[in-house]
Amino acid sequence: MRAWEVLDVGGLVTVQDAGRPGLAHLGVPRAGWLDAPAARHAHRLVGNDDRPATRALLEVTLGGLRLRSTASRWVAVTGAACTVSVDGAARAHGRPEWLPAGAELRLGPATTGVRSYLAVAGGLDVEPVLGSRSTDTLAWVGPPLVTAGTVLALGEPAGPPVPVDVPAVVRPGPLRVRPGPRADWFAADALDRLCATSYVAAPASDRVGLRLAADSALERVRPGELASEGMVLGAVQVPPDGRPVVLLADHPTTGGYPVLAVVERDDLARCAQVRPGGAVRFVRVP
Amino acid sequence: MRPATTLLPVGPTALLAEVADAGQALSLALFARAAAVPAVEVVPAATTVLFDGLAGPEDVAAVHRLVALWTPGAPVADGDLVELPTTYDGADLDDVAERWGTDRDGVVARHAGTTFVSAFCGFAPGFAYLDGLAADLAVPRLDTPRTRVPAGSVGLAGAWCGVYPTGSPGGWRLLGRTDAVLWDPARSGGRGDRGPALLAPGTRVRFVPA
Image (tube, rainbow over all chains, first blue to last red; front, side, top):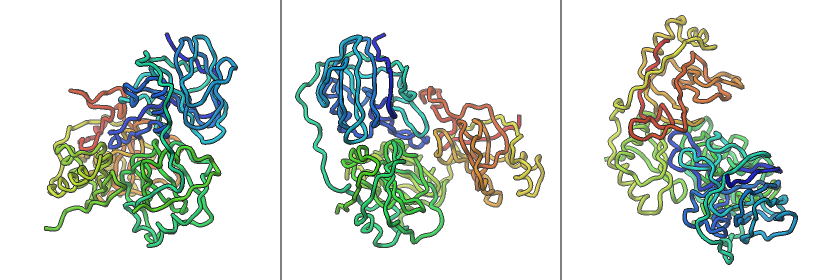
């Protein structure tokens, strides 16, 4: 079998593709890569552009990765910056690199950002579950976590690598938000306060949500509980402690905390790359 | 005529419809699906239906038009009927009997005598909120949830009945258990196949004492 054997992982490493949308009514989270532009860039670099949504790659969180390949393949690393080496020799981040059969590929810890993406020509040929190869870390639908000893089958390469390609431009500045469906559960100026507050990404942030902390809490004006309702990607939920959570790909399909605002889709990739302790601000779009 | 439901925007690509109760939410969700609503997700819940994954303003307008055509009040009672063989030996059976002012047999008779309808799923894949118990039979959740509830456990919370599809922590009051497989990702949902969730929204459910 043409495969990767994982020798060591530093942090959370999962298999991801574009996810399994369309099953929220059964309680199944969408899952899928958190930083879509970076993941798609990695796929383009190794020639997986024929069907990038269903080609699977690895999402490597903060800690690094070491693996050995039984087949020669083009690979590419994008997203969070990290060192890349093949049998100890330095290789580039953000470019297709040749990984010969038997060689050891190593990704160092992320130096900026949180999530690096490692794509291989042909993709990772793990068994799809409900139409997707993504691991959902909330309900554990999909392939198991990647750990030392995991063997990942490799798909057949479809096209040649693309050496010249630029990542999508990441827009700097605050996360853009629109008012959410439950803004009336908060004081009239709550959205303004959300946008005027300097937040810090909490260490408990994960694939379910970017959890934020600040000195001041957002106050509700409406007491009681909201009946659980469907949740969207990028919803800014505010639990009773007043600390907002931006829902990411593994979010529960329904939730009982009111949604004050919704982050614009194009800004979600940045939510995936904010390190714990990193600053987060919001701005309202008209 | 006053519209039967309000539609709240949830960002540019989703709309949240507010309705009277879970039965109406299910009714609207099934109506919208049958009419091929241009949404990737149609998610009924307790008093809402979320239409998510709308491609643009045209889809948003289409959902508005479709929801305006929906007539609330039509009860949904023609879904598939699933019978769940159930052993009534749950840890909270006596507690529920006391709350209902009856004994164990009385609880079993009322519970097994009810035809439930799966109103919506949430909490975990395949976990269905089953509607059908009278409001005066509502019971509160446990003050302290159990750290582990085995798969197949049948429980109550409020006037909802639910069956845990997989082992998980949980705060529902347990009446018994079933061996039925509530959640199986390998079931495709194709012709003659139930799909991964045995109790998908709209399914009718009866508990049969084993």
